[in-house]
Length: 531
Image (cartoon, rainbow, N blue to C red; front, side):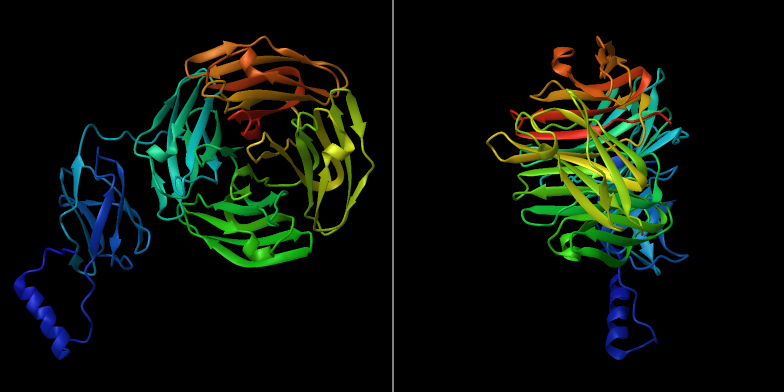
C-alpha cells in the first residue's frame, strides 16, 4: 500500500534506528487510510474513516480536512474513526495524525453545498435494535407522523462494525403522513440498530426482507431504553435459529449485560456481555443453550434496547419482535387464527422466583372462551397450542396472572412454497387511540388490521389512513363486545402504502398483519399507544 509524506532522509534515519538499535523506543507505526465514507458532502457531514495503525488516541491525535482540524466522536483500529467535516474545511485530503506520525494524503473529501443545519431538539426518540444491509438483507424504516405539524427527523445508525454513524441528511415527515426509508441506500453491508430523533411525535417500525423477499420480519420500535428486557419466544431446536439483538444507544458508556435463559431444560446463565457505546451486538442463542425452547431475560448496568429474531428451514421463514422492558399481570394479543391453514401459539414466560397462576381467554368470532388456570413454575417458559384449544376460528387472546409474566403470540402457515410465520408481543392495556406505522396494499402486499374489543359492550372505531400524500378517512367499523374484527385494508384503500390511525371512545387493542407472494411471506406488529 502506498504511504506518502516521508522524505528519503527520514526513511534512511528510520532504517538506521532499526538496524543499529538507536534510541530506546520503536518508531510509531504509520497510520493509513483505506477509505472515507462518504467522500463528499457539506460542512457538518459525519464521515467514517477506515484503515489501520490508528492506535489509541492521545492529546496529539487529530483528523484534518484539507488542513482544518475536525472533532472525532470515536477512534478505533478495528472500527475506524468517526468524525465530522469541520467549519472552514474546503475540498482536499483527509489526514489522520497520531503519535507524531501522519497518514497518507491521497484520500480526498469534496466539500459541497450549504452546511448541514444544527440538529433540532427532539420531542421523541425511537429505538429499533434489529437491522442489516449485509448478508442479502434489505432493511426499511417506516415513519408515521401522528400530528398536524411537519416532523424533522434525525437518524443515527448504531452499527456492529463501526459504532455510531449519524445520517448526514435529516428527513421531513409531513403532517398525518407516512415516509419510508430504505436503509441499504444509506449504509450498505453492515449489521445495525436505528435511533430516530423527531421534532414531533411519530411512530416507527422496521421491516426486513431477504432471499428475493421470499419472507420478511417486522417490529415496532420503542421510545424507552431500559436496564431490563424480556423475550418470551425463542427456539433453537432444528430447524429453528434464535438471535438476540442488543442496541446500546449511549454516546459514552459501555453496557455490561447479564443474560438468563429460561429453557425447557432449566435455567441457563451467560457470562457478562459487553456492548460498546453506540454499538449493536448479536447473540446466537444456540451457542449458549443448545437445542431447546427458550425465553430470555437481559439485565444491564446501562439503558439498552433488545429484540429477538428467529429463522427456520434454512431461512425460508423468519419473524422478529421487540422485547418488553417489564412483565405485566395482563396481556392482550389482537391477532390469531386456527382457521384458514394457520397454526397459532401462545408463548408465556414467568421470569420470577415464584410460581405464577395464569388465566387465558380466547376472544373468538363466536365469543369468549376461558381456559383452565395454568400453573407456571418459577423462571420457566410455556407454550400453548391455540389450535387445540379453539379450533377453526379467528381469535384474539387475553392473558391475566396473579404476578407479572410475559406473553407473545406466534403464527405459522404454508401456502405450498414453505413455512412462513409472524410473531409479536402484546399490549399490557387497551387504549382509545392506536397507530400502526407499516402497511401497504400495493406491490403485491395484503394488509389487515385486527381490532380486539375487551369490553362488555360494542366499540365503534374510526379508521384513518395516513398515506405518503396525506390522510384518507376510512368507513370505520363496529367491534362486538369481547370479540374481534379484521379489516382488509385493500377494500378501503387499494394500491397504496399507508399507516393507520384508530380512534375509539372505548379502549381497544390492534395489530396489523401483512402478506405477500400469495401469502408465501408475512409480518405482524402491535400498534403504538401515545404516551
